[in-house]
Image 1 (tube, helix red, strand yellow):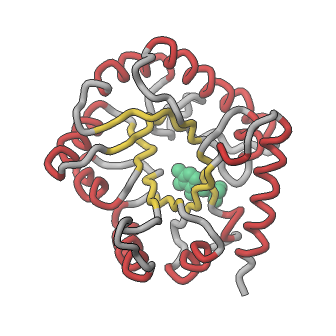
Image 2 (cartoon, helix red, strand yellow):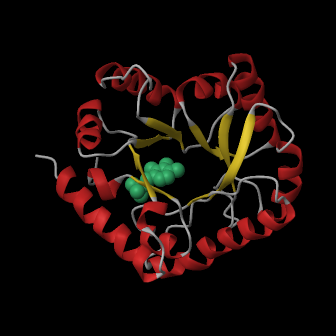
Image 3 (cartoon, rainbow, N blue to C red):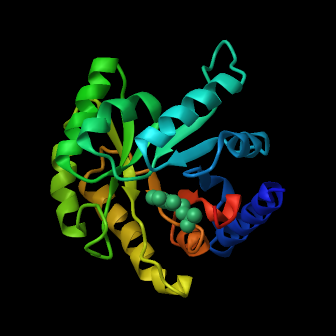
Length: 238
Ligand SMILES: *Cc1c(COP(=O)(O)O)cnc(C)c1O
């Protein structure tokens, strides 16, 4: 059987302990359960255990699951659904429209072109999409994202787009043997957010999406508000 219940209990305890270590309120940290390669039955189980935020990294895979989940979860007359979907993977411009329809939050905006496409689609649908700017702090060639130096210029342009709302930054830390080795990267994202808050005080810099299964405790110590967890909740391999 799946150990999702036990895993989740463990994750919640570790989130709370990490927050306490730096005198943060654990409620400032939202767990985004990353459900790539996880079937609807297990996602439903996670929902029943209280998770409300789910992340996918591919539009096509998400499409089927989001539709199925929305049909299974009871809706109230006031709220259509209380399940929130986050796009956490690289998004191609030609998938922007599908993404805007599916996701409540897009973490992975990594170019002005993509931001413009999302904004245009959102406007046509009468929506305002909250987004994060993905930053490639580590500078790894394989990673998507703005370089830290390019972010301020990108913010100036993206902040003017009418269909989106910048809400913070996202990064994917390098894979390291010891999570402590990811700390400088995670800390740099927070510092960059603090610099942007000074430079662009009219925007709402509420979120830092950082921390995955191997480094989420360090990420919380460094200020993460959204931790994206796959294996920690659903187990591995999958
Ligand atoms: C898969 C994925 C995660 C979750 O990774 P785990 O190491 O399984 O927690 C987080 N963020 C992104 C962008 C992912 O693709």
